[in-house]
Image (tube, rainbow, N blue to C red; front, side, top):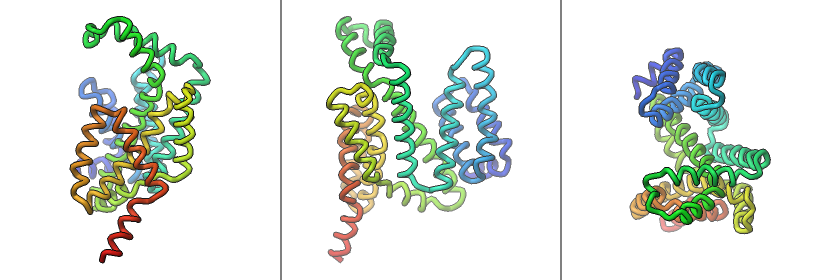
Length: 299
């Protein structure tokens, strides 16, 4: 990756062509999109917004052609994703703050969800209809009775838009991390990158936003229910950052972190709120500072 990065930085045209090929690739689509995102981030961070925009224009070509003939489709969604990735890379280049990136991601996601709910007030009914059709044709759920399928469709329809937005946020953040790490390796700043990742901590105003949406979730306000997974995302990241920072001083945390990652894969609905609660507390109590003060007193 070191030689590839140097080549792409030396020849932006090669980077643009590679991103286009990755976007058009019919195989390994998730990996290809992730690598394309990392290249866009690398080029934007290292060489500026204009170079990133040049690469983005190449991604726009299949999106425009696809939209002209078939309407909004997969290539157009990929272009929107790459556009957002480029915007986050510009933000990181100008501010160098992971916390700010997470806050902007959260605000944009909440605005998008609010817009969707204003434009389509019965979005849950739309999701229920589509989920019901999907469950009826699913071989995995074929053994479930029809009333159970309807119950699941009704349940998940309340959170579906938010969950899609959550995964988009997570993928954007991981793409930004990959591109920033790639830049750090090429410039010899890997240690600085690690230190910045381990210092992520949410600001208190975000805590108040989270508490307001949590109250709305408890009172079953549709927008708040749909937004709850989006609210959790930056706090989960901040919590994992905190735990990794603590693990540098206390090795017992490494086992806990491993278990939490497994839990995020199989029991997100339990583990994610627990992690978010830790980050909520850290926003007020600053556990890193408290641990540092405690260590200094012992010495």
